[in-house]
Length: 166
Image (cartoon, rainbow, N blue to C red; front, side, top):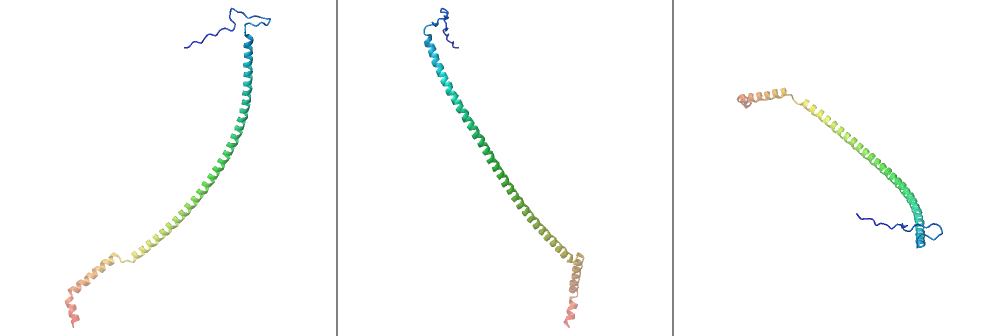
């Protein structure tokens, strides 16, 4: 740690202050007072400049507050308008999408209904055709009858030739 230098006392103990008579306490006191008065003058001047600067800073701050308030108000208005515009645009887009989807869904429903009706008609036609087909019993009996006739023709072939040969 550095030690602070000891300051010499203003009033040395071996020289007490004089009172009255205006002779001063020490030699050179008037020069020191004159220097102090000069410094006080500078201090007053500097304080005056600081007051002027502070006044100008206050005005600048007031202008900045006003400008900032105006700018934020303008930005709020612009943002509000932009948000409203976006909201309106999105609402329109959503409405358009809903309309398009609704239209396409209706078209698909109608197409499916038409396809289903076509399938119903095709099923009814197929059912009707199947109903007109011969039954298994008929097919079996027709086949057996055909086989019986063919067998009879083979067995009686000679007799048939004889009948047609005359």
